[in-house]
Image 1: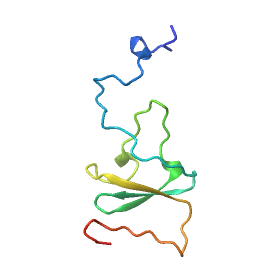
Image 2: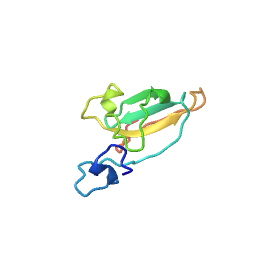
Image 3: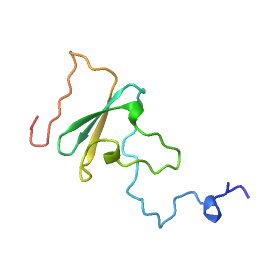
Image 4: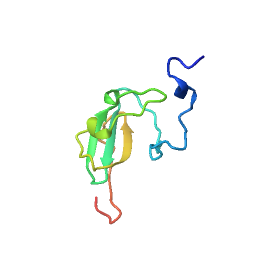
Length: 103
Protein backbone atom coordinates (compact mmCIF):
# COMPACT_ATOMS: atom_id res chain seq x y z
CA UNK A 1 0.00 0.00 0.00
CA UNK A 2 3.03 2.28 -0.28
CA UNK A 3 3.60 2.77 3.44
CA UNK A 4 6.87 0.87 3.64
CA UNK A 5 5.94 -1.29 6.68
CA UNK A 6 5.01 1.76 8.77
CA UNK A 7 1.36 0.85 9.34
CA UNK A 8 -1.54 3.27 9.24
CA UNK A 9 0.51 6.13 10.70
CA UNK A 10 2.96 5.84 7.80
CA UNK A 11 0.74 7.97 5.58
CA UNK A 12 0.70 11.05 7.83
CA UNK A 13 3.11 13.87 7.12
CA UNK A 14 4.04 14.37 10.77
CA UNK A 15 2.32 17.76 11.14
CA UNK A 16 -0.56 16.59 13.32
CA UNK A 17 -2.14 19.07 15.70
CA UNK A 18 -1.37 16.89 18.73
CA UNK A 19 2.38 16.82 18.02
CA UNK A 20 4.30 17.49 21.26
CA UNK A 21 7.36 19.01 19.55
CA UNK A 22 5.99 22.38 18.42
CA UNK A 23 8.95 24.18 20.02
CA UNK A 24 11.46 22.31 17.83
CA UNK A 25 11.99 24.57 14.85
CA UNK A 26 14.95 25.71 12.77
CA UNK A 27 16.08 29.13 13.97
CA UNK A 28 19.27 29.51 11.94
CA UNK A 29 20.61 27.73 8.90
CA UNK A 30 24.16 27.99 7.61
CA UNK A 31 26.54 26.01 5.45
CA UNK A 32 30.05 24.93 6.29
CA UNK A 33 32.71 22.43 5.28
CA UNK A 34 33.53 19.27 7.22
CA UNK A 35 36.74 20.69 8.64
CA UNK A 36 35.32 24.05 9.71
CA UNK A 37 35.05 24.80 13.40
CA UNK A 38 31.64 25.66 14.82
CA UNK A 39 31.98 28.22 17.58
CA UNK A 40 28.93 27.81 19.83
CA UNK A 41 28.19 30.42 22.47
CA UNK A 42 25.92 29.73 25.43
CA UNK A 43 23.72 32.15 27.33
CA UNK A 44 26.25 32.08 30.17
CA UNK A 45 28.92 33.49 27.82
CA UNK A 46 30.98 30.33 27.39
CA UNK A 47 32.18 29.55 23.86
CA UNK A 48 32.70 25.96 22.73
CA UNK A 49 34.45 24.82 19.57
CA UNK A 50 33.31 21.74 17.69
CA UNK A 51 34.54 20.48 14.36
CA UNK A 52 31.73 20.25 11.81
CA UNK A 53 32.35 16.58 11.05
CA UNK A 54 31.68 15.78 14.73
CA UNK A 55 28.08 17.01 14.46
CA UNK A 56 25.77 14.00 14.10
CA UNK A 57 23.99 13.74 10.77
CA UNK A 58 20.27 13.27 10.56
CA UNK A 59 17.69 12.38 8.00
CA UNK A 60 14.65 14.27 6.78
CA UNK A 61 12.44 13.11 9.65
CA UNK A 62 15.14 12.73 12.31
CA UNK A 63 14.44 14.27 15.70
CA UNK A 64 18.07 15.19 16.28
CA UNK A 65 20.47 14.74 19.19
CA UNK A 66 20.46 16.85 22.37
CA UNK A 67 23.33 19.35 22.50
CA UNK A 68 24.58 18.16 25.94
CA UNK A 69 25.35 14.78 24.37
CA UNK A 70 27.59 16.47 21.78
CA UNK A 71 29.11 19.28 23.87
CA UNK A 72 30.19 19.26 27.50
CA UNK A 73 27.56 21.78 28.61
CA UNK A 74 25.00 21.60 31.39
CA UNK A 75 21.51 20.51 30.48
CA UNK A 76 19.95 23.82 31.56
CA UNK A 77 22.35 25.94 29.47
CA UNK A 78 21.19 27.16 26.05
CA UNK A 79 23.29 27.68 22.92
CA UNK A 80 22.47 31.19 21.70
CA UNK A 81 24.68 31.48 18.62
CA UNK A 82 26.64 29.29 16.24
CA UNK A 83 29.41 30.77 14.11
CA UNK A 84 31.12 28.63 11.45
CA UNK A 85 34.82 29.47 11.17
CA UNK A 86 36.93 28.19 8.27
CA UNK A 87 40.33 29.17 9.66
CA UNK A 88 41.77 31.03 12.61
CA UNK A 89 44.10 33.85 11.61
CA UNK A 90 46.08 36.42 13.60
CA UNK A 91 44.48 39.44 11.89
CA UNK A 92 40.82 38.58 12.61
CA UNK A 93 39.08 38.66 15.98
CA UNK A 94 35.75 37.60 17.42
CA UNK A 95 34.45 39.86 20.20
CA UNK A 96 31.44 38.90 22.32
CA UNK A 97 29.54 41.58 24.22
CA UNK A 98 26.55 41.42 26.54
CA UNK A 99 23.52 43.74 26.67
CA UNK A 100 25.12 45.65 29.54
CA UNK A 101 28.41 46.16 27.69
CA UNK A 102 30.57 43.42 29.21
CA UNK A 103 33.18 42.08 26.77
